[in-house]
Length: 331
Image (cartoon, rainbow, N blue to C red):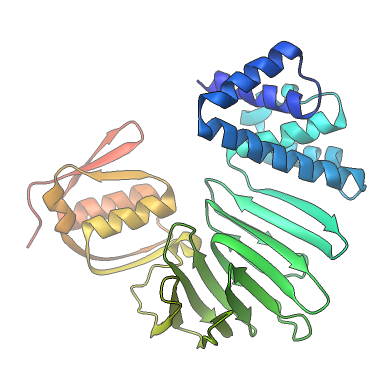
């Protein structure tokens, strides 16, 4: 299965770099027609390739240097993919992009226009921390993406997904996050924004400093440290509240969880999301078991052990799945 996937990546690399034969192009087109997922994967690869190709043409991106740097970061386990790189510069760009997608690394590239540089960052199945050109830091959750652009009067981020920001404040160039017609404006702070495309809400949580949370038709509200607000896309209204100690909104970044009388189902959902694991319950009645516990950077194995001991459960491992078994919830 893995070899078949690598073969498709090689075909895409060859096609995008203009090296595919007629037969290879036909095989690629047949694969694209098999499913919408295949076609979406191809289109995303094409976008990344074209972006880096434009950067290469302006001499703003050193592909060879970037690839050598990536080789060192990837390590020995992925070295078998390196021979797939083409002999031409564009082939190397394409293969580099596809390798990153395949391995779940973050992809980052630059666009250049009359308005200045736009940096785009995407995270697939892993979280990542990046430093923006202005020195601000962003911690991007998995399956999220963003662009960062600078103009004379502002720094603008367009976000799809979830990210935590530590912003270098600049009154002359405010830092503004835009999600369609909703904005979050930095007033010198560190904060989290959750804007999942499939959700009917947008959430902002402030860790330090202050932000303004507003829309094109609603003046919104200001949030300070320890406050959280939710924007309802349906009603256009903002709701503010204090952040309880048991709020785990930023566990994806901190690996810290607080559960106080929480259901075991809630705990497993949170751990599965952050650790990318598959913890399940043998019986549905176990889902309602209550647990009070704190996890602070524990390994997944330690978390499983703590749950086992606390609720008198037994963990059974089947491949990548862990099934928690028990008769009844403890009193």
